[in-house]
Length: 576
Image (tube, rainbow, N blue to C red; front, side, top):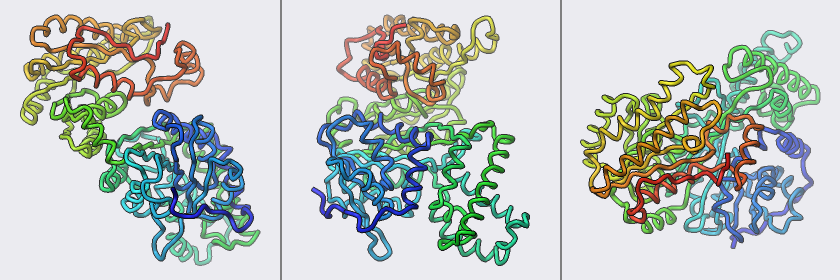
């Protein structure tokens, strides 16, 4: 039960809030990134659960949640702006599932979520593109955790989180806003049509810097968020990244919302701009945006004549009690050591998380280029109370794998579970396939299986586990993938043969054949291709990396002690 009385607006909805809501609600890119949150929630939300939308704004995210989760839930909207929450109230007050709460300011601080809705009152908290605005992450995260019931989840997303290995040319949302501001200032300095704003311009810039940074702050690194979550007591933390293209037309419409323009270019008119100043500010921002778009089209490798690419980060964490309960359920794997190749992202990282939740110490593996992401995984998994270490190695090189095994032996002594997951694709029809196209895939996907397993075999004790990630393509084949299909069929043959060799030592060897799993790779597939694939899947949805991870955890457990030489398909029943 909430501790604070439900909120009702005391005044009509402002034009600014309505304008902002209309711009965001109609923006395809914003709807796309909100809808990406729904699959992360769908499997954990139950009938009767209470979901808190923290930083609900004008209700755009709430509308998406109500449409996407077809279960009987309560939705509590929390925001610190009466104007924006008033718009949400106007739209959703008729829905009996929805309640509204105002986050009040107390002196120099805002109330925490627990102070508003009560301790242990919510099953889930979500926050859409809000947390990058908050100065003190640790305090806010602690308040959110206290508001959650034991085992509750916290999901947030943002297009303004920095990370070292973001693809070149992929932008953060607020970086484009800052560039628009800087270009607009340059126009004022050079274009005589705006010369009246040159007077004391440097003073205005300095004066308005604090406000502009509040509205569009410098982005923090993902490591700052993960550390703050850990310090607040969250566990079972995982991150996902999604690329979303924004069209220039949509972005210009967003930048032209008057409610935002005062924050983008406060040097012209400030908060109390005249009608003339508002018009000039709009002209300046429009001109600056168009110049930015021209620059991006010319210089940015991920931009074209229609738009640019942004990255959105999704972070899901759980209240500590849930992780402790899970570790108790699968104590049989506590203290075991697991090596997972190619585990800095995608399916490999999901496997690492699942085995860590089961109590395994985890050796993360990737290339030197993925070191930053590997260290982030170490931080994340260490929060679960297990040992974790990132050891880079080139799995396509036998000598590199030998050094990899020596480092693992020195640090951990033995390897109870070996998961050969590393893999890549280079799709092309055989007629157009080069020798390099063939051998590069063979080296990473198939030769790595020998390189890693041969070097680690002496470290695997009796009753150990070897789990190799194949693919349904290795069973059924696929157009344009003769190289990839050959390697994945080879993984199956390798697994069945090694199972016969290892049987006397009670070491089980199995393969998993995933179907179409939603990863960064599938996110870049054309929508029409994805639609065709979904028609072949009886369950009408792509799998998640966690679906594969659950299968790995089962085969690694004592419950699978009498299963060896098998291929487990995780494909939703796909029929080619």
